[in-house]
Image (tube, rainbow, N blue to C red; front, top):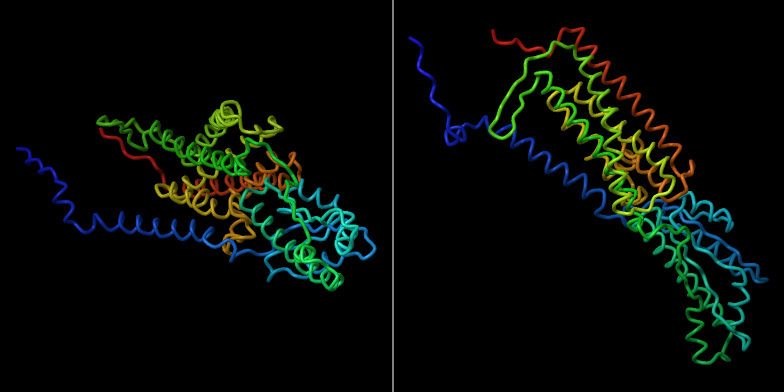
Length: 416
């Protein structure tokens, strides 16, 4: 006689077993804690973490008293505790650095500043002297805003200092109205130094487009990995109440990884094409150099997808969690795409040297906003994509070859 079937377990009975709680509780708690610390830690205090934000400082003043030169020297000497990297440049040099994304903004003292300022103490005054704050929205709305605030504050400080000098020069002959004017004589004008399109998300379209590429590579890589494992009989296929398991196909780990990477290379063509279709053709995102953007998008998403396959092959079941941390959890706060890297804690600046999302966002930003200039970050991005692909191939196939040599096969015995 056959033994009686064991009774089915119930949820109520299983909930009383402590061991069933341990792993999900610990992992969920750690994820919640790490995500909170990593994401909020990167954006909670940008002003306090601000270090060496590059801003151009231009002196075009040609007046005899050289007030512009004096103001420029005073501003450049005051780095505000190391938060600003004032770069004294010519107007052409400043424009070039705005156009290549090397500075977040500029403060310009125009020609004729000295004449307009000194004329305020006489009856020959016809206009107030001006200083111009140039923004760089292509560097992101927050970064450009920080630079504009710093430049405006410096301009108003210089205006008040100049006002005290002009008031002393005017002496008692100045009228009450003139004294009010001389107290803050400089008009500060703000305007874009490197304009971007109106359909650029205020400088955030590059970040969200990069995020789409990373998600396309990450999610596509995991879907392909799971789909191949299911098709080859190494994972169960469960849809709703239906459960199937295909016969296991004998195949080495190395050949399995090769199959997954080849499929990733093919399917990524479709996913990146659809990303561009949605963003540019349907939603109307401003995009120049579309053929280059298409090639770059494919290579960027492919590098992520190959990295996901390599990590999954090396770490097995927890590979998806590992790749999530590598490409998304650590990548978002260290990308410099929303909060400038000059305004995040040192830990994130360290991560930014090798985290994939920062490398990819620099290239997308260069293509979308800075005329695809290599010195705007595109050259470095291409190099890092190449390094990423090479590392994925070397790491993935080195690990699978090691497992195969050790006889650690995935093949499961089939029922007779």
